[in-house]
Image (cartoon, rainbow, N blue to C red; front, side, top):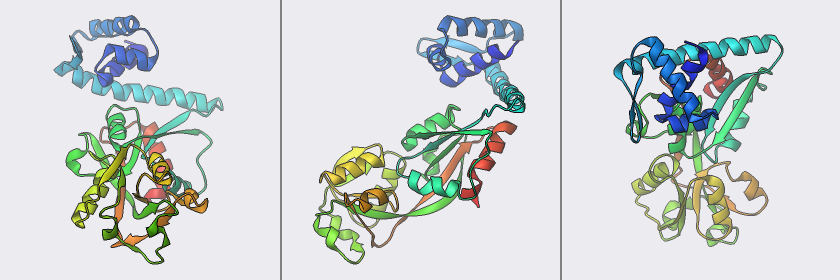
Length: 296
């Protein structure tokens, strides 16, 4: 068996599909099928069952490919070591970040002075459900999102609390509440149209639960999947929104929105989600380096 066979088989296992694995690896489906077939011939048992809607791992295949992924990770690490010794920066860590946290998280992440020159950080902004899915599929190394009910977190992921953020109310600059000089009573938004995000899991669900616990049930005017769109809709006068403090500082400084504290003050917990499976030395090292300032 060789590295390509293992890499292709692991990709099919993660994607549960030869077609999706081929698209992910940018190779033909026939090439992947042939490599997986050769690997199965060498190990002496089928790794997966071909189904109409995709593939399912056999019991032996599931155990074998779990170990195969660890081997592949270590081989990748060795290749990266060789490239690094040649002076090429190749270490990569992929970070998933929910919208609205960039202005809060990234400065803290690098407060201790920057990253090693040998590390390439790939950042993807996405809704919580997408971050969970990409972590589960092995496409992300770290995910930073609002802490949610453990029952809503896919199996195989663990969470570590990083920090808490306070929520603020953002309004158009000419809204009557924008003139308030003291924290706004949250009850005053009872009849105000609200812009929300991610009602099924993550940020929006946490905000909606918080409002309901306070006995506040404002009408929801729009549901979007990122804080940037929420801010644009507020600027356009479509409604109000509750977002993490600091996420609208730029717009507030430009006079596009008004960011207001409210009472009773509410905070949301931010967590770092990582796969529970054993990680390669390469990934563990990058986790420690990138997340160190936030965990401190």
